[in-house]
Length: 524
Image 1 (cartoon, rainbow, N blue to C red):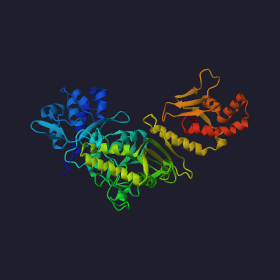
Image 2: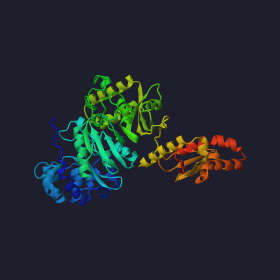
Image 3: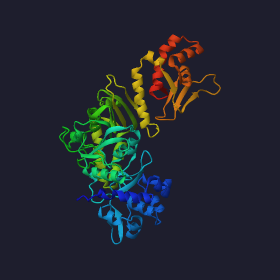
Image 4: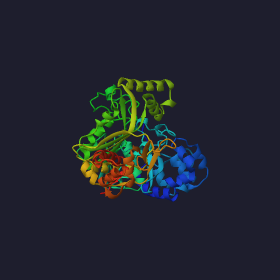
């Protein structure tokens, strides 16, 4: 099958001006379609949006062309796009029978971190619904499809620590979403991918969004950037644990086998081409070699839950020395759920039932062979601190969080620095303030003289809740940054008629927990 030519980026500037003039933006499309139709697009359902674009306005035409991939009359397209002849010549549009045009790529409006109007360019049908979305990209091998914005890429963009950096690496850039975000706060952005088509789409995304082009390089893992170091590495890698990796009969198992995603039935955007979760383990383990001191690595990952092993210890074993780390497991699926999810993602459930059953069985057989009883999904953040005893937290947190979470992640690592630098004596000399939006809840039977327990609950960041005793609740309640912790503890001891020495000995552990979880912030 021959691969169709992709649009040239040369017409991106005038096309962007016309998209803006027609309000083909995230806000403009939401206003036109309404919340219901707009949300339905993320579920690969287009009927509500089609009903909302039955008029003839330029915005309705652009939505039908670029977002819904519908054919529109040439005259209607010309009314929406003054530079139509050039866009057709450069490959953004193609003739579709007599007197009609179609888009050759998905163009999805996307709002930047600071409210910028951006556009993500991807394969037809892949801006909504993934590879099994609204219509396959004609003439493109499924293995080489390039997807647009999805839940995973939005999650990674939201958790990324956004500070001014000199250099950043977007490893596995796909359609360029993370590189696009990085362009706002990084001087030099490098983006890599094993799929040449992905690099071209990333170039289109950056050009159409009006940001400077990244240094685009072809290759897998850290191969294209050997010997180079960065202040920030972000990756939404092909983390899906699928059958047929090198150690499963699809290669020689030495790590040099097929490129990620090249095996039979594999999809480059999601299947790593290594056995099990080896790709994520390798990416994490090698990341420190490519980070500057103080640099960050943030990625999404899947990891196997293996019989007889604690998943926390297993993932912690991936972490490179000298790096503080925060690993958060957001979801766990059993092996059947996991297989079904990714078979449906690829559209296998719509094909031959016997072939679907055979693929399903292959997934389960490989999990059984590896004694895998579940798969976790979450994010990993590393910071190259150089600490001899790095701060490492590996936890499960399936609850809702506040996005963007990046600022809160940066604060978490800053608090680890503070705690590491303060022994118990220094901690009692420090001053703290109660974090904003923390509420206290008292839980107990109605009419009881005292509550059974007290809960502190935060509405920010991870939105945590933690039980505290009377001392902890009282301490948090009076932390306004004016008094050292030791003075507050002494006052509580006097109030409760406890020995202040004993209370000073047992309170630092509680203070450390409240600081680590973000309920208390040290005054610097």
